[in-house]
Structures are given as structure tokens and as C-alpha cells.
Length: 405
Length: 228
Image (tube, rainbow over all chains, first blue to last red):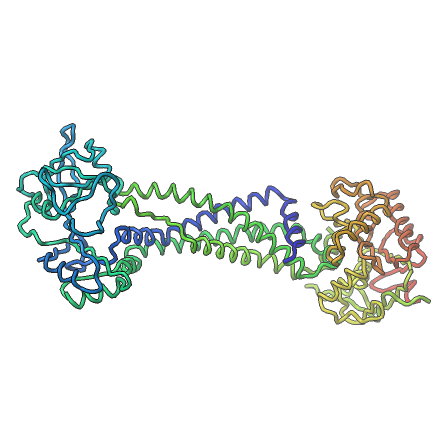
């Protein structure tokens, strides 16, 4: 469209500034909701994928394809891990034990914490060290090493070098009779799957077993596997499945795809339904505004046609007005949508056991592109009816009717 | 005799209505020669405006032929008719229909911009036209800031913007008081004197009396002053 069409449309809108501002604000509200729904539709997937990838392991191996609370442990984990580690498609394997422990704070209060036992020989760790030193392969005398998250450190006034006593509580449903174990705080770490209120500590597998009083020391809840560079996780998964058909290996991609089909599909569906409703309201808003505007200008449009404006030209004017309204509202909707997403995120994160690093609303360039595309489509669809009115406007009859009225 | 600018041959215009078709213009033939100043008068509903709309190519006759500059325009498509109106026909309406968001100068520039006239040429032509209608000092005023007579003069300047061969005016003094109406008729006389063919629809016999040729209509037919 030529510049004069845009200029003319802009001035047509500007003649009713109140109506134009209301239209733009309406589109901004609709656009903000739409933008949030688009961020929500893939937010959990994107952030879940980022969480899975954060430690550098791209394959997970479990004893059964069952939820964590009902999943059996991998028996004879040392042997299984060694076999998997020997595969040419595999770079590294880390055994993990998951449990809980009780610690006593400086005020004498007891705290339940998440307790993790992990291989200390691997280069990669399922946490990110923030301060101090990591778990070493062994300790040179003194209490065994422990890394803790910041929340635990703050609650118990810990710093690297402090000591902390843990009473293991690791068997599902039954208390552990093992004596408490004193640990030395080696460092602070961020555990990707921690929820904002979680207090978490991690120790070497042997120290985990001692704290929890476990007999089956070589069992593991999970293997974290890093595929060899250039081979990829799919090859590593295939090799592990061929080697140990009794185990269940999944690449991060497969886990995400599974969640996409099951757990997160609700968000996609909700997002799709709300997006559709939102767009429909946007469509109605623009259609009503433009139709009212066109109805009020019938005589003026007929006069322009009589002066030599083509049908295409007056129709383009209506389309340009729709695009300007939706364009301005759409641009305004982005900061509004981001602010709204941040607010909704804080509300949703108040739910228990949601990892702090997990986001319901995740920004992706494709969300922006989809947002722009959907709004553009809405603008065109919303303009169709008023465009039709203008294109079918009978010049002579309209002028005659204006004279009579 | 000068060649005709527009010529209607056996034109009938029927409007379908729920109670049956209404014939607004009935088997009418009229020729408007180059340089004429013609008034069309008659009682309300006699078909004056319909005839004007047909002559101005904004309405199509149900039957009959319409020739503009000797060319049959009855079969032209919408775009071609728009182009014809833009370049050859100027319209002046009873209610002015100036765009309220544009200044007087911008309203006069509008048809020129549509015709693809360069900005410099538009400015110069607009300035000359507003001067011609005596409103150079009101160039940057919006229609809401103009009196009725001033608005109609701007509308006349707009109608003349693309140097039309034919200027059509539908009750151009209908919204104005008598003195202002006389001034507007005076302006039409000047436009005519400067070489433009003018056709004015009016129900005011005093205005019709000032035109060299008067077409008197009744019941869709020209009673007097038809084909010359």
C-alpha cells in the first residue's frame, strides 16, 4: 500500500481520537493475553528441556517406566553403570540416590531436607557449584564433604567449612535406624529441580549410604548419562537399550516429548482455547469499531467515490485502519504481556514443588512471530465486513439518501 | 455548435422497490455541449439528482446510452468510471462533504494526490484554486472552522482540482442562506466563464434563471430545454 493510503487511514483514525485510543487499548489487552497464552503453550516444555539439559546429561536411565515415587531402584548399580560407561556412544554415567534427611538448626528446630547421593568421580554434576569447592573423589581425613543449596545454608547459617549433622531418612515410608553423620560443608550449589522453598544437600554415594543406613549400597534411583560428543543421545539410548533391556533409557528429547503428550498437554489445550477466545474478542472489537466508523462515514465515502476514488482505494483505507489499530495495539501488548506473564508466573510459582528454574511462560522468538501473524490475521478478518460494506456502497443511492435525511 | 461533453440517449433509470419498480428517469435524452452552463430544475422527486448522477457516471442507466466526450461509458467497469470521474468530472454536493480531519488546502489536494499529481504541483494548484475562490487566507483551517459559504467554496475548489471538463453541482446552495447562495452561483458563473462546462441541479427558480440554459423536469422527463 502506498504511503498516502497509510497517511489517510491514520488521519481517519485520528478524527475520533477517543475511539482510536479505546480500540488500541482493547487490542493491547487482547494482544497481551494472546502473547501470554503463546508463552504458556510452550513455556513449561522449553524450561523443562532447559532444566534437563542444564547439567550436561542428555540421557536418563531408570529401572522402570513408572513415576518416581513408585519406581524400583536399579539393582547392582555399580556393575550396570560400568557396563553403560563402557559403551562407545557413552561419555559419562553418574549414579544418583535420592532420599531425605533431618537436620537441626541453630535454634534447635528440625528441618526436613532433600538428600542426594551422587557419583563424585564424574566430570559433570547434577548441580551447579556456586561457591566453595565441589565433592571430591575422597576426603583427606575429617568429616565427609557435603554441598548444600543456598536456602539450606541461609537457614542454618552455614558457610564453606562449617559442619552439619544429618540424620538419614531415606527409605520410603520407614525410618532409618542409622546414627547421624557429621558432614563438612564443601560448597554451595544450585540444584536445578529445587523448588523455591527446598533445602537440599548432596554427598558422595558412599556417605549417602552410610547416612541412610542402607544395606544395598550399590542400588541407584537413576543414572544420568552423557552421550559421547558426535554420537548424540539417540545413539546412546539405542546402545543402552540393546545392552540392558531390563533398564529404561530415555533421551531428554523423549522425556520432553512424553511430557508434551501427557503432562503439559493441558497447558497447550488451555492456551489454545483461551487464545481462540481472546482472538475472537479482538476480532469483534475491531469489526465493531470499524463498522461503526464506516457507517458514520457512508456519505463521505460515497462523495469520495464520486470524486474519483476507486472502490479498491476506499477498501484499502478500511484495511489500513484495521492494520494501524491492531499494529499499535499489538506493539503495546508486548510489554503488557511480559509484565502480566511475570505476575502470573509469581502466582503459579507459589504452588508447592515447582522447581524455581521451571517457567510457565517462556519467551521464544517463534512466540513473537506467531503473535504477530495471528494479530495480522485478526486485523484482516476483522476488516472484512466493513470492507465489504464499503466495497458494495452504492454511490448514487447513498448520496441521495444523505440528501433526504 | 461545440461538441458535447456528455450526452444521454434514451436513458431510463428504474429503482426496484418493495411496492414495485419506481422509474426516476424515463426515456430521457439530453446533450450538454462544451462550455455550457445548464441548470436542472423541477419539483422534488422529479429525477433531477438521478439525472445528475447518471451524467456524472456515479449511477448507471437501466437502459439507454451515456456518452462522455463521445465515448459510451455505459459498459465501463468501476475502476474505469472512477478514473473518468477523477480526471473529467467535478462534483459539488449540497452538504459539501469536506473531510473534517483535513484542512481546506488538504481537501483540495486530495483528488490531485489520487490522480498522482506531484506534491509541488499540488501545492501550487491548490494555492491558486483557494485564491480563485477567495479563501487563500483560510487554507489551513479545518471545515469545522469555516462558514457554510466558505466550505462550499472549498468544495468547488476541490471539484476543480483536476481541471475537469464538466462540473456537476447538486443543490449547491441548499444549505446556504440566500445571499451566500447568490455568491456561490456567482462563483459558478465565473467558473463557467473561465471555460468549464457547468450543470447545476436546483429547485430555486431564481438560481435557474441565472443560467443560460434551463432544463425543466417533471416525472422523470425533461419538459423544457432538452436536446438542443
